[in-house]
Image 1: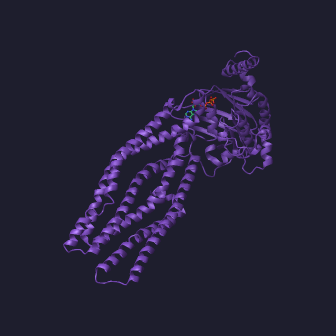
Image 2: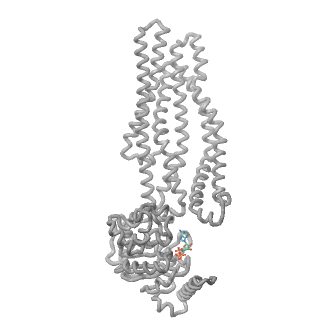
Image 3: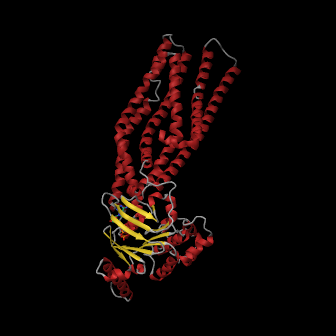
Length: 581
Ligand SMILES: Nc1ncnc2c1ncn2[C@@H]1O[C@H](COP(=O)(O)OP(=O)(O)OP(=O)(O)O)[C@@H](O)[C@H]1O
């Protein structure tokens, strides 16, 4: 609770106002009982009043009820304002946190976990913050004060009401104990279901292509069945206790009524006091029900906020807020080793990519090429060694500055579902429309953008799925051209473009790399044959380096890769001539 309430910030006072307002409303709710008592006392007693006095008392009771409702609504209004502000702050804090976490930790948890955190878990706290908490405290106070008043009016009546409360509490306590472990299993099943739903939707293309239906996608089926079973199991345990609690808890007059009547008959309690005591006793019932909601919300807070708070405690990338800036842009890897988990995928890497030159990284699939690029942009923290730009260790450069120094075009050309112009402008948020268009022309995507329905205002769909792979790649290259950073990393950035466009993009890339440090990771070796330096990586180690002419001479992995590449190009040609390949 304390951690969650720290997100209240400036709204702390509003939350207090909300609680006070509901508190006043709750106490005003018992005023009419006393007015009824005065009226009855006067009617059955010797002190008869004029009819106007009764009317005034009735008006007072009505007024108290009206103000009670008004204060309640005002309090709830304030608590909602606070609750939604807390949710906003929590979501902002989570987004800020994720930006600072290594991508590896985010990927490991899966998108479903974060979707659940951002949307479901944080949303579940809304009713706790807007209702259960601000109402729980006033109702607890009311229960306490009413019981105290009852004890003062007639201690016997007070004790009889008190004695009835445990009857309703016993089922609740048993229920909480019995469902404690099940609750944890239920939340775990909910999390697993969320993860697999996201995976299922994301993998829809494969599911359809291989003609699978949801029932044959075992993981999804298992997850939703597990969720159903655990949810039903919980309800099966709790419904009986809920029913017992709902029956006994509000029945606070269970003992007070028969014994109260006995006291009246015995002459130790007058009728009007009995009626007042019964009315006060009945006002405790709904308060107790509210309190049980408060108790069960503790379980929601425990499970939902703990997930959030754990995510907020995840380790961040170690980075400086204001660091050094390099004077030149040579890139050096010195004895760099790295593993996503215990197994190292890069071992003792030493390499240099010089400024104003093209450095290509080639190697078999899975050899660690993309990992090298990702380490340079600090998506992950290296295990040992040092990566420098110029003469500055990248750990001494702030993440912000590092991202300004590098344009990274990754394998996965990701576009947001916002107009294409804004997708390109992500490279330089203050760029003019003309500058965006110039970058698009240079990246060879202007013509196809103009053929789309709304030109630069067209939205490319979720993750850009309304565009072809090549179109998406060209837009991401335009983004990098616009950014105009001194270091450019192209990770298979031209793999989805056709040969005709590849020439265009090659030209754009040539313009882009003028006076820059360019690192190209490419499968198509023809695109990097002109590179100043080619680094061959195999199984996480640098095997050799040199230019194309040098490397092709020796019987080496590079030659094998080159031969395989040229062979595949010939297959393409045969294929277009109608032969089977
Ligand atoms: N997020 C990850 N978690 C765990 N292992 C990973 C992760 N990403 C990559 N790997 C593993 O690290 C190794 C190197 O992967 P990397 O993507 O760097 O290879 P690559 O040479 O770029 O491959 P390709 O040419 O196929 O893209 C592979 O064995 C891969 O399975």
